[in-house]
Length: 429
Image (cartoon, rainbow, N blue to C red; front, side):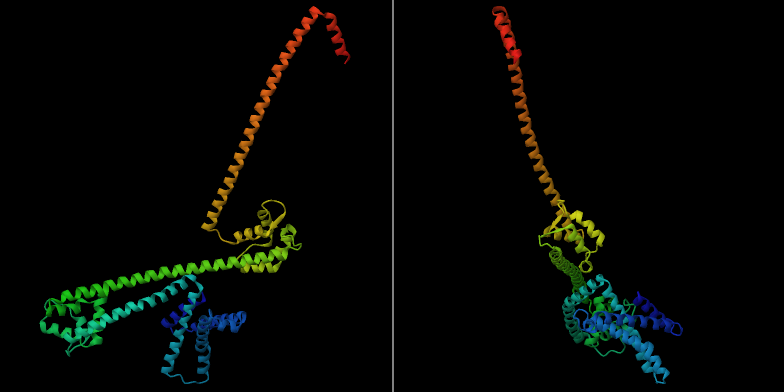
């Protein structure tokens, strides 16, 4: 934000250099940037800040821009106050130093990762484009040597005469020769002329004088423009697109590698924390050990550094989620796997994993339901057999009762005395 505001202030100083308020803004921005640089050096240590391989270029840029700002804003006015003679040439140098403060805008690249990807793509793209520019330069120089040999001359006039010419329909042959000789006077001029043809900006003012002299020159301009302009521009566009795609892919791969490294470090930290918190060495954590572990400040600091942002209260509530079996203990696998999944962001892999987990649960439930159905079927068959046995027993009992009744009737008719004696014995029992 301060960098952008400083750029606007510099633009205002260029348009309105005599306003007295600019010096207050300059002092403010120099103070801000100087304090920022000092705090960075103090927090990271000057050795780490200046001699770190990944930070050296940025540290050098910050130091140079801040030094230029201090020299221009504070030291230069002090020298003028002491009577130093600053000539106009020196003033121009000081103005150039002031413009160099625009280098601070480069620091914006460091703030936004997307800009870093874009700049990386530009560097890669220029490395590939240099070969295309080399081919184009060879074509321009070769063609310039040929056309200078046949069309060059010492005609009077300048290249402005060629650009100022309008009406080529009334152009005489002698004037066309003069304009062609000016356009292809020497090899450097011919290179510049052919470059104008490639850009197709005012190229007809160069082509028409040649066509007046040599009508077949139309045939020569077509393949030159087709190859040097259209094909080469298409190749440049393809290279630029490929570089951007490659840079984006490389950035994504780097981010994936960093995430994998961070996840591995987080898992290693969880395993170490688990073993340290397992006071009784049982290989499991109970709730008291878990709460004691998550209450340690060093654990929270390390989790925050590794990208796990949860408060102590939230971690304590996590216990009920991790303790799936409800036995009051966590194994190291449950502990590490559960917190690892909570640390990661939701991605397609997690959705797919959840889908497979649901399918496994559904499969287990289906198997359990089949077992229950089989047991119910077995119970149903047993019940049917029992009911059938009870029915047969009832039928047999009815038959026995009928036989007993018939026997009693027969005995009552044929031997009543014996029947009474049997009934008396049965009553005494």
